Image 1 (cartoon, rainbow, N blue to C red):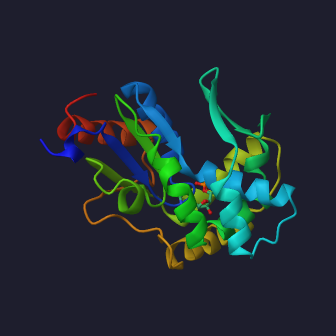
Image 2 (cartoon, rainbow, N blue to C red):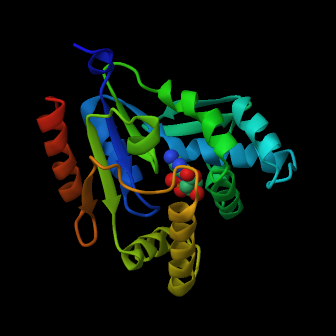
Length: 230
Ligand code: DC
């Protein structure tokens, strides 16, 4: 057996925002009893730390330094993961729109990505890990036995976001959301450092018009086939 085969298995779930990968990753981790890595939260935490320090968001050296020295941990609170930055629960703050925008900028910097790489790999613990992101299957865990690239049409993703915000009492225009999603997709796919793209050996699943349970069953099927559990 090679060194790679002895490492705990990783289920890599990549895809654009709104594809449902966060929900799928959480449910999978629960069902399998695996750890969960929400890699986007690391970029969001870096962005929040930079905003709080009023750092220049275009200064890669400063941002890299912030990413390398982040004092963060994740804690499970009643089934939800809380993100703790310097001792403060910032789970809500990192979801704010200005943090999302800053995270997308920060995530395009190769220095920041390199600084966060080992931190992400450290989540790989027995009995296994479900990793949610954009480059889990391509860069962070290229040897993951299960790689899924989850997509949905931009229109469907905008509609899902619209419903989520409406439930929270936030009123936005569907058209603005669609434009935001298209702009973010373009930035994520066209950046040089780890662009959003399926790994060569990823299974592409389209969740447009499919309910969460349907997608979950398909991914569980892959886990049974490739890892032998689930
Ligand atoms: O998935 P999310 O919306 O929480 O991600 C926040 C930002 O980080 C988003 O702009 C995409 C980026 N990201 C990334 O570049 N690589 C990852 N593995 C995860 C997120």
